[in-house]
Length: 175
Image 1 (tube, one colour):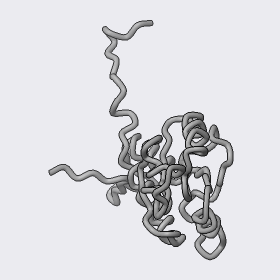
Image 2 (cartoon, helix red, strand yellow; image 1 turned 180 degrees about the horizontal axis):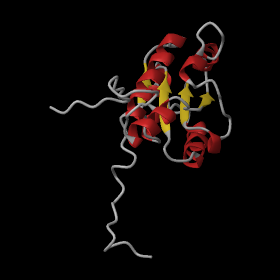
Image 3 (cartoon, rainbow, N blue to C red; image 1 turned 180 degrees about the vertical axis):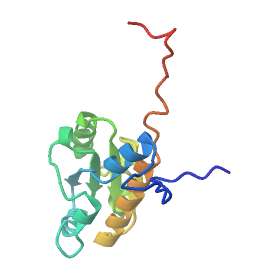
């Protein structure tokens, strides 16, 4: 079983030296600078706003920069009931986000349609966009959203960045 560490520190090396992989360093930068885009559609948006307040302090996770532009955000937080009328707008905003992009479904309504079993309510935002983390509750507490953001950080830190690139040898490299 191979054990991987995010950042390794070798105490036998003198001076201020940290030994790590490029993937681990880049993922550490990425996971500590996720900029969420609030997609507050219903009552869960109040709890989303409370998460950004001083009591819960989302800034200690590097996510305090709420961006209302899809081109500047990394993570869409869908908070609340998604109706069919709003589904196209949610999908359009998701498509405008740059890669890599993540989605958090916050609350029972965003995850499964909640208590609304009607013709106008989408039964889960995962029917139109891929969801990375689900947050349970009606409405979920800010602590639950912080837990979801930490799970997303863990997911981001495990993503391979440079391992997927094809390595070019001098014989196959085209100049």
